[in-house]
Every structure is written in structure tokens, then in C-alpha cells.
Length: 303
Ligand SMILES: Nc1ncnc2c1ncn2[C@@H]1O[C@H](COP(=O)(O)OP(=O)(O)O)[C@@H](O)[C@H]1O
Ligand SMILES: [Mg+2]
Image 1: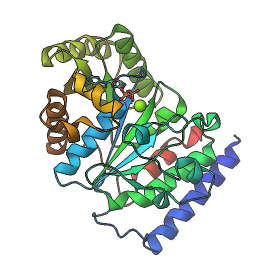
Image 2 (image 1 turned 45 degrees about the vertical axis):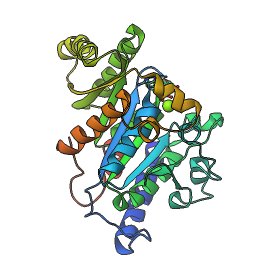
Image 3 (image 1 turned 180 degrees about the vertical axis):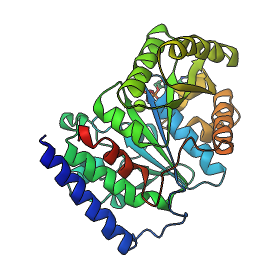
Image 4 (image 1 turned 90 degrees about the vertical axis):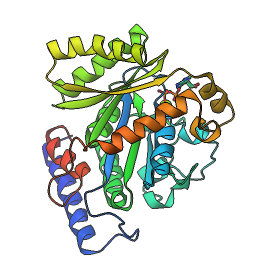
């Protein structure tokens, strides 16, 4: 896209944000502006448990009294709604096509969590245009102040869709399993985060581990190479153990924290939510605009 088009996009977005600041959003902000925590959960390899982590972490945050919104950002192949047994009438594709506003597609999930469902099987959405991305991120910006935590469930891999959603968040959690292919793909993802997007830090979360010790060992292996070759600080968040009850719940379209609150995996999800909520966010937006907007400005060259 020509540079002139980029600047037009940014100017029109800037006008919308100015207008938003003049006229309050219909969803009355519960938070002080800018206090929402935006966390992206991503991975190099697919099938490592991101969607289950997002849903269960969301539920655990909600139990801690947080107002939680989950964005299914696996835009073309989203399945968070299926995991939760929901059948939403509208989804992100309607927002991207300009037919619905983001707050019109929200559906209630388990606990008090709110879900922004993605579409499934629309190939064109697996690679959003810059206009579509800007429309979506602007709408997210407008919604964000009404929640305490926004969790973003990204697709796997290093596509621009995935990377844009990840680096737009305040914190990135990279999920990895003990399989060598998952470890090498996690490294590849961190390499792109560091080299192409200048990310300085991310969290690592191990899933499907036999025990906490195995999780730490996976982190150690990855950390040796990231420390040596990349300028990114990888902070170990913890692990979720392999628990066959997770699979049982997936089959019943329920989340394990709801159905088996005392099983091993549920305890891990709750511990993680506690840990995250106790830690200071890695970064918050500067000034009085949200981070999505800052991201668009920062990466203007690639818009
Ligand atoms: N902690 C766990 N224990 C056992 N199975 C798990 C666990 N986490 C995820 N799974 C299984 O892995 C599969 C993939 O999980 P999912 O959350 O859909 O991964 P992703 O979103 O990364 O593709 C699920 O069907 C689920 O059965
Ligand atoms: Mg998923």
C-alpha cells in the first residue's frame, strides 16, 4: 500500500479517536482510562492449548472479581465459541465487513466472562487488509475501557495477523509444550517478535507438562538460546500440567475450571491468574490513548 494511503488511514483513525474522546462511548467506562490489562496468548505451533488457556484463565480472572473480555483473534479459524458450547449469531467477520459494531457481537460465556467470537472457515480473514485491521483495532480501542482484562486468543504461527494482535497487547504470553517442534516454533516466534517488532519482553507458559519441573526444564532450554541470540527478555510464568479432564471437558464443550475446579489443570490455571494479577503489567499505554493506537502509529511504516 502506498505511503499516502497509510497516512490517510492513520489520519482517519486519529479523527475517530478525537471524536471518541469528545463523545463518551455508550459502554460506560468502569475503569480509569488506560487501566485495562491487554494480554495476548500466542504460540509458534498450533494445538499447544492456547484456547483452553485463554478460556480457563478468563474464568479464573473472573473468579478474582475481574471484568473479563476475550477476543478470539484466530479470525478465519476461530473455535473459542465451539470450545465453550456457544452458537453466536454474529462474529468478528460482521465487524470487519462493517455490518456490526464490536459491542453488538459480544456473547456471554461461563462465569461472567464476555466473548468476542471469531468466524470460522472464511479464508480471506486469515490475512486481514490494513483497512480491516485498523477498523477492528479502533473498535477494540473503543471497548477496552469497560473491562479489567482483555485476553486475546491468537492463531498459531508468525503471520502478520498473529504478530499484529500480539504486539498490540501490553503483555504477550507464548505457550509452548515439551515437544521439540513446539520448542523450535516458540523460538522462531520470539525471534520475529524481537527482530521484526522490537519486543523487549514476553512471558513463557508451558502446557501439557508432566509436572512443574518439566515445565522449568523447557523454559531453561529455550532461555539458553534466547539469551544468547535474541534481545528479548523471556520471563517464566509457570506451567499447566497435562490433565485428561481437559480433553473430557473439550468433548463436552465445557471448561475444566468450571466442571472440575479441583483437578490438577484447574489449579494451575487459577495459580496463573493469581500470579499475573499480582505482577505489575509489563507495560501500559502512555498518555491517554490506548495501546492499539500507539501500535498503529509505531508500525506506521508497515501499514
Ligand atoms: N493441560 C492440558 N491437558 C490435557 N490436554 C490438553 C491440555 N491443554 C490442551 N489440551 C488438549 O489440546 C488440544 C488443543 O488445545 P487448544 O486449546 O485447542 O490448542 P490451541 O488453541 O493452541 O490450538 C485440546 O483439544 C485439548 O484436549
Ligand atoms: Mg486455538
